[in-house]
Length: 609
Image (cartoon, rainbow, N blue to C red; front, side, top):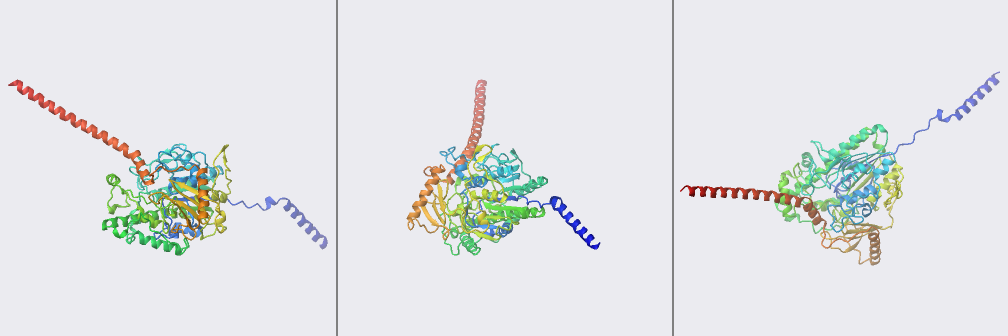
């Protein structure tokens, strides 16, 4: 009896086990697959190579530095020498002459305008990261500077972004809805393709982050991941910051730009960003700090304090966004990408008397007002050389100071991405799109999009480097670049480069960037075979991409001034001439009328005698 009972129990247990085995889904539900990551792109404007604390800066960027500790720093990352070409390559993964930005509208010579690859806007032969991720089920948002086209078919809302509050211009005022006077007639802000008005308490960095937080919140109920592209105006001209941020640096920068350049180089080396003892050159466009008079020094110190304050104000907003994502539970599953669109801006808007007189009529240029509401200021070539330290050159040039900028990629919740790592392998802005699509598990377009052929992505995924792989994903493959006649060819550790005036003399030079990132030792004579091979590589690139030679005497600075005159100066002069002409006619008419009246009175008096 006991034996039979035990057997019955065993049979029952076996039967129950068989039933459970036949219904595994109901008994043990499968664990849901992890959701696709959110993506946040933080694009700074005109930040130099060492303009971040974790790359050597002395001003405070604690929140960007926290992302660096959570992710990977790229110390050999390259963009274009000005904003639109970089932004188009970031959006599409396609080289600038292929995506339409062989040059941007403000710097293109008339002879090139409209030629293949010189559309001056992002063309429709490329697919944006917004379009790719939107088609894959992402919510897609963009705030801030766009500068890739201003017509309805080219604004971000038409290029893959569900919601977008964007500026179509190269820059604008940071405190009010005001253009860069003399360059544009208005600040072209739009929301979802329609003209938009900024709030009264507007400050650029605070606004573009708050708008993005609003967009993310509004779409949260959908349960979809998001792409958030935040495009700051900081630190583009005009340099402007809240008073408290400027005041934070009131005791700094009195030793000048040469001392700052040297201090930053030492910090960058100590951080492992550049080789220890890397040589530097003093750029010929850098003024001698010791020869400035007291007033010039005071103004220069103040503008760098404002520049530092503008960077810190932007960093604070990055921290506010990160805090919001942490509170919402999104932080660990968000990929963060921080970069600058080009090197530091060296342009001195006050270099010509005409500009100085015009700007003096439009803004309060007093030293005490530099950086504040109603001001107009720029750091110029002196401080730009420090922002690029220890590199040579700056924005617009093909020198490392124009093309090499900080890049940080972090995914806090992803174990495969090395936290706190630094890679010195060559990376390029076209690599960002394929990197993000791979990390997100989104298929690329493969050169075909919605039934039509499009430009294939030329960038390469940086995922192997993010996981700690040595070297560059580009290996020994040649990587060409050209903008406004300034050109480069990267291959392995070497760079062949040519810069036109005023940065260079138009001659090709060869450098080993691994040991000489400051481009101080030309190896063209020492390694003639490599020089010839790389020059042939560049010519192949230029032919394949339709690169055009620049007109004789061209410089980007002069072209910008010419553009400003054509767009704003000439119409204002015409209007002024019409007003003067009308005034002269009015005065002439009054004088003629008075004289006629006097003659009539004289004739009447004579007739009375």
